[in-house]
Length: 385
Image (cartoon, rainbow, N blue to C red):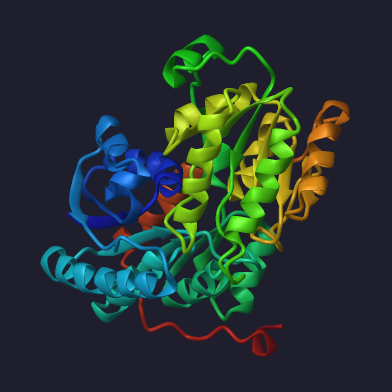
């Protein structure tokens, strides 16, 4: 019996991994262990582990790591707790493979424990760049700890090779989020309104804004600039999703709570879950903020994204993405330009066919063939050019 452990620490991460988890569960001779940590287990972030259980996916273990603060010191301590908690878990469970997605601090800490336990790692999605976030460094570090790599574009595959990884272990599979966008059976607008308990009787935008973690204490100012632009554009309804468990995320969420109480055309949610979020995107006029979703998934819906600031700087973008600085007047100008914005037939660089199936089949094949060797040789571009 092959034992595969899949890690999830956030609502977005789980939404992306869900199809891979479900496909692995259908494989004979595979013991799938889903381990939940981080924001999933925090009441202030909506206890989103419940969404996993509602999908009928059994959670092998819940490992608490969050401290009731999002200062840099608290995040470092949470990383320490993650290493301790997962050291115990890996000692007990001894998985044959750990599957991780993304670039968050929790993921880096868990991978450190996995390396010490000599557990091979499969990583989605290396090679990407986000110049405004500490995730940039974390992502590349996770790449060097991992054996199997799944990238979302060919450009990112080449970048993983540039980091010294063997091309034979790197697969350009496209983005799981795009596959979800295309294949998920979504709510009708009426069903969405019932789920939200909110009548969407005006054009609306979806807003998600996270801290730019390589900037010092800019979260409050930037969110106030965003809210200033929203306030002078009451022709839209605004559906906010809260920031994640990054440094200064609580500042953003507190400001959103206060703003929504004073504005009837706004609502804020801890988490929409994948199906409800994608359904909301389907009927939206635009998406706004600095979430990777606006860059990766939203273009497949043919609606524009207003991408604010530097958090996603460096990512490949569709023509449907409009970039601006976190300045109220610039954001206002972008919102006002939406009605004249053409969004037909945009190419999404993250879109490929059968993403989750290719990932699943590759994982199973590598484990059954016994081809994984954690003694990696550095792939030198000079020698192999």
